[in-house]
Image 1 (cartoon, one colour):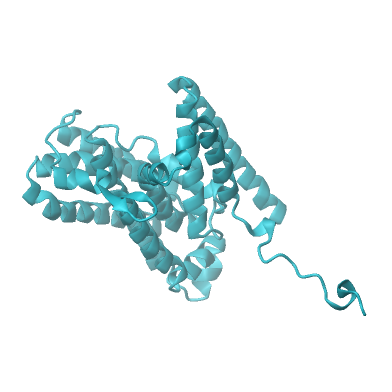
Image 2 (cartoon, rainbow, N blue to C red):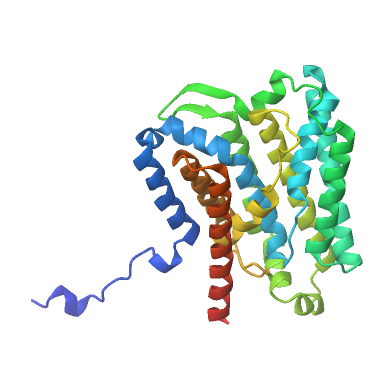
Length: 328
């Protein structure tokens, strides 16, 4: 009888370790550290609460990924989050009947900002980091001037429920936040846009070599403008969840633009475009939020937490750049 090893070639593992998303590995390690400090984080209900609080960052990161894939950045998303929270509070002013019409207005505002970003970058040839920096300052200025630099108005319960409502007695998991359902619907839409249509391939081609993509006849301008529009609309969605979960604050979106970019890079998206997937943004954002949670649970002073976050973000971006150089 011939030994099995001589007749049957050894089969490779179905999942190669090298193909596992780096952001997923980081997230598992960080979440394990969180669970070691607070074991109840292993309960389904608390994990759902973790996802609820992480949902705005995940949505922002996925929207940012659309821009990153085309080789750009969108620094205006944090300002859009702030504008959405302040504008919703002022426009709705506690009247629940105004919630849905004003949410429509907020999306129109986001659409306008996205179009402005896309048109400036595409037709004026302004680098995206400069164009969106200008938009960020403009939107922040409008938000603060409109609100007078302080929280005004009120958000009714049906708006706040978008960020904090819990469905209870759900089979297996106990409770299911409405924000997690919104997150899943957004991820499904974003996945379809990137992987279920030709848009994703066009964005990757443009990010990899925009000149070659243009010569090949790809709609470079339309693809880039669409990326900025998706990013801005994602920021509106994230702002609605932030307002629902945390209430009104003039600092609601502060720093979130850099967190969204860092999340994409941690998850494996190439900083200058041409490589990345929905999983890059998803697992990168989960890793980053797990880091924030871990530092908070460790009880470190805010100043030290900010410093540690900065060091880790620089290390992640540096590691990504080093990895890209090795591959080229």
